[in-house]
Every structure is written in structure tokens, then in C-alpha cells.
Image (cartoon, rainbow, N blue to C red):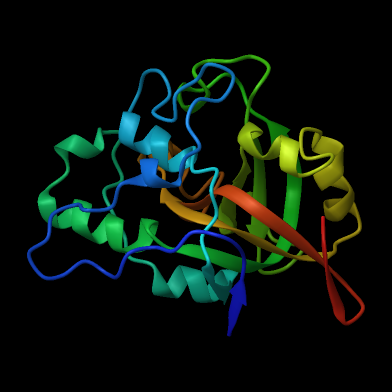
Length: 218
């Protein structure tokens, strides 16, 4: 099943022998309140993945469990992408060039993050961490992280407030979170405690809530 958003197409899959040809800057509108899409500090390539504020045309639909089974494992160390092997960068590019919609339940809480490198250390413009699971009773350890970037606040009313997402958690509503796949190697220490996988939807471009037989955009 496929869902459709707007507006940018992604190039075909990497051909054999190509090296890390995916450029996330193609999906950025540029500076955000003075912060470049490469952020400030840490890993510039990873920052640019997290700051993709343009969506893509075709989005594949998964359940949380389907995504766990489908996605590969990449390096679980806090190392710059530039130090990965060409084969590891190729494998990451094949998946990080994809936008997905993942169906499940938000659990635990919606956490306003501390200043981060992707947002140039801003104390005002910060991400919100959400946890998406296959059932509303799952723990964080069995969930995947999905993140709201401040670059999306202007397009979605209420996305700058944690309470917007906490209501969905309290009411145990089924949701679909759509956005870019990103492997966040900087959180390897959280595996098994605060997340099941280092794959994230980061950033989220759309959240839909199931209301009866309809999916309503948040």
C-alpha cells in the first residue's frame, strides 16, 4: 500500500558501485532562523538528514513491526558518517533516501529535547521526541523514536507543544507518522532501554489519527 504526499521526487536506487550519492541537502529549504541545514557541531551529514524540511512524493506504508523486520542494521557507534566504510554509507543511503509512513501508537510521553547540534544549539527551536509502538501498552524499550523538528512548526498548528502529542498518548489513538528515515548512531547507548532501534522517522512531516474509518491529519 502506498500513500502520497507532496512534492519532491527521490532519485532511483543506487546503482552497483555508486558511492554515497544521496545528498540530503536537496531536501532542505536552507537556513532556519540562522541555522544551516548542516547544523553546528557533531556530524554535519547526520544533522542535514534531520533537517530535511521538504517532503517527498511517494511514501511507503509500514506497521512498526514490519519496519523492524525490513530495515538493516548499521554501525551502532557514535562516529561521524565520514568514518563509515563505503559499503555502510551505501546501505544507509538506500534507506535514508526513503520516506515512510509508519502505523502504530504513541507511548510513554512527548519529550521536549535539550539543545542539539542539528538545531545549532538553540534553546528555543528544539525537537520533540515521541515513541511509536505496535500497541499502546508497549514500553520505550520496544518502541522506535519519531521526532518533530522545529522546522515543521509553521506548517502544523500545535506541533511546538508537547501537549498536542500527549493527548494522543492518553487517548491511546492509533496514528500514522510520515517522514524521512534516519539512522541516528549518536544514541547507541539508548538501545534496549529507551528505544528498540536506531532507525527513526526524523523529521516527521505528517501525523494522521484514526477517527472511526477515517485518517485525520493532526
